[in-house]
Image (cartoon, rainbow, N blue to C red; front, side):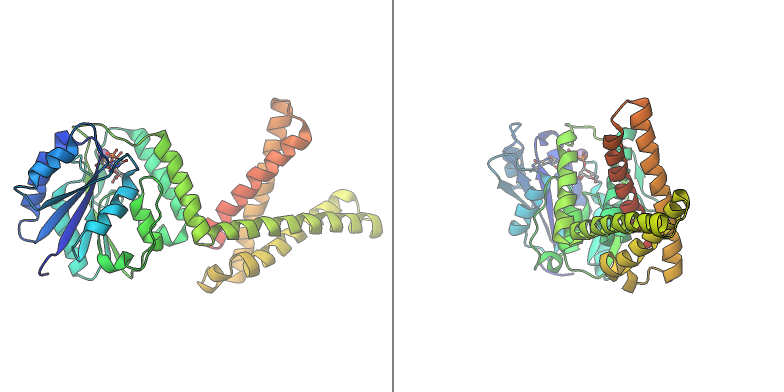
Length: 359
Ligand code: GDD
Ligand code: MN
């Protein structure tokens, strides 16, 4: 690679204590490239921006200062406007992301990857951060993304805050991230063919303090919701619920017909009605809710039907279990308990089907 090759965007908020070693380590790792570092600081009270400016006298450092604290991901988006490199990198300022990994990421880009991610969750990657709760939350966040935003499934660590990408990836994208997860936004809104993951070990933080708290976790859910809306995944969920409602009509209508007109014992009618509504729900979902997945080769029709059946019967168990628990254990009015049971079963059905039947 030649000329201005790589811009590393680093969002900062109160990171003065790690800035000097960070820039020195970056300089060592990138000495054979033409690179620049773009700090995006939200007017940190600890003087991070001033320190960064003083480092600019000796290193290829630029500093963008925003007037108030507006979040990690939006800082990266603003940094993109300043960055000049053909390849753009994003990392944290607190030395939890080792700069020595950048040349390995660059190699992946040179070998044809459009996005190269430093990953904790591919073979060789690890988590040296002391908090196991943070790790569990990280895993949970990935599960949510993999389930609800299927295009992220090819990436083991879509929550990484340390990655490189070709500028073209985001050239036509309008990035509207909320919170921390800028990579997720790029994976959904960017245009690319090949993603590579390079293992790294997420270090413990020795200097300063993390800014990731409950607020950022709620922001994450909002962000996923916004991405689902933008990508039609929310509409899919609405369709799934509509199909479910149609199944209730089929079930009730048939129960009445078989019991009143055909004279069957009502429990037998109920069993037949339940299975019939499962089958009509399946066919409608297959055509109407998941037509794209069907085309993408989600296995044989009968296979999907069997999976859908198993999930639906388990969903019935969820519904009844919650009905019983709320009513008999917590003394909730049984119709209200049933409503909660139906809501939980719908959610279960949706997530299990999107993760298994129409994977
Ligand atoms: N400009 C700006 N504005 N920077 C911010 C803000 C903000 O509101 N909030 C955080 N930062 C900067 C921090 O100063 C740091 O350089 C970086 O963003 C990461 O913040 P941390 O608070 O240290 O995050 P973390 O270590 O808990 O999590 C990070 O690493 C994980 C693993 O890669 C994040 O990047 C996560 O998204 C990531 O999963
Ligand atoms: Mn950190």
